Length: 531
Image (cartoon, rainbow, N blue to C red):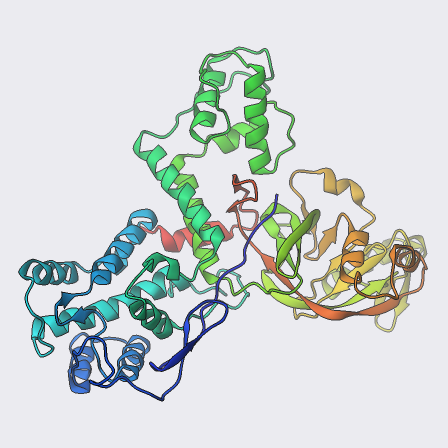
């Protein structure tokens, strides 16, 4: 299953005379050629004093007031939401966009009842617009203020969520909201929603969120207690009927049959469910599968919302090669020039030794590496073992290296035959491992924080594919040489280590995974608190 986390990043700032970003069609502004009464398209203007009075009266915070000043000063204080003939159609389009966001997200913080009343009043009267009309000016400025409030919330995520407190160390994306609004108005609000600086994955999750909202409104699903540990094809039970009903709602089972008989068609439906949850696809109903099915529709809706919030944070994906690790999925995904190529199973840090969520730049491949034992492992595990057994170092192919201990290269080295370095303060890297059996487990959180690869040779060949000095024969030879060798990659490769417990895969299927580090739980406390 392939995870698409590429995000559109909007760029540009400030003033009206412009060119378009070749990537996103969002204006990049300069201070020249400001709008004047001779080149405007609304012929409606107001003075800067009115804006300052509005900012003061409404106690608008600095960041938002500065955006409003930038927007209007770049337009020479020309109206953006009104023409002489009346309110622009795209004003209502924007309000519908806000209503849609509130509807699917449950976030009503951006709703403004007084603005709706003003817009309705002006629309009903259908009067000729005078730029000095206090009600018109109030509506104009409220629309602009609320656009920036909405964009900050819906496109960048909630400011009250401190990403570092939630152990997310990937820098959050930045958006030029002034350029975003200016472009939308310049295009007369056509396809307003297409300006959303969120990625395809966000939209896919949104579609499933709407589906799950409908399931909840229709009563959700219920469950009966299992009367044995495992159910398989040919069995009969009331529980099997309930399983069929739920799998029908989630799209895993498409046969019009809710009988209590475990049919061949249900076997395939169970496999579909197992595929989406990262389980071994054996078609049997067991306690692990039932535990996931017992989670309510509301739980799943909240899980989707949590991950949509995370997707608002992620920066623009490179158009170059890059690697994406999704910790709860236990998979590494490789992208070539921004397009998906392949993925592999990985082992991540245990609950006691979390793999950190951050981004780095892969620079080096180390064949036949030494393992320099980290201070924590040295203190808590290696030194006590040495004190208990004087032959411990020799038995584990280790040696003293100054004041620390390292394990020499070889097939039993804890890092295996190769490691991949992207320097970071967390001392996390990708590496091979001699413990191959762990890759067969459904849940693979076993390491001290670093990321073990099931196919390290494949990654090495991918990173060196444009280097004529390296082919598969030479890579395998270097991995087994027993002598450490550093190789610098020709072009550095971004590495993103993320944490997504819900996403839509390349097959269009909604995937869920366990919240192995409790990060979802922490976010839920902020997003869904009753306070």
